[in-house]
Length: 178
Image (cartoon, rainbow, N blue to C red; front, side):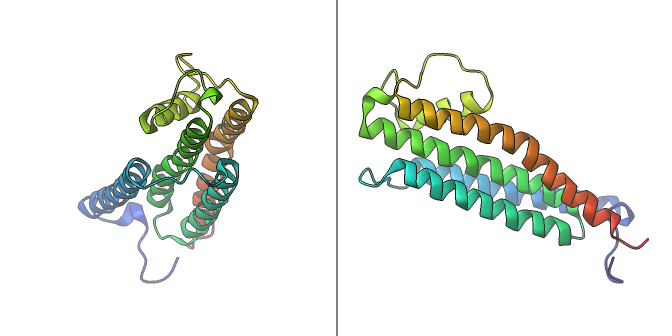
């Protein structure tokens, strides 16, 4: 730890609370921007949804990579890790919701019913939460393939990403001088 840095536990309670609230508010703001962007920004139907999915997942991977490095360098890695999860998961879900929306618009027969942006977000979250109410179903091979990719990605996000983020916290904390 640098001479000017104080461990989180050594900070006054009020300062710890302020840091935690500021991180939470920053994460909520980023999440809100992602969600509003999903519902408001125009989506082009002439581009390949699958190519967009690949690019979107590359962006998510890049953001996560940057966040892991940031956590490893942060003086308060636990707070940073929670903020990272709070922004990475909505971004990941928005990538899939966008893909479902675009493939449903391009070919309505991809799903059991036409999908609005809200329907696409709903389907994405039900797949992520493994609830699968069955009211919206991926019907075509393309839609089912993308849903399988999301299911595997969900496992990666929940397992590997959470472990990586918290591993970065542990790495940071273990390399500090007491």
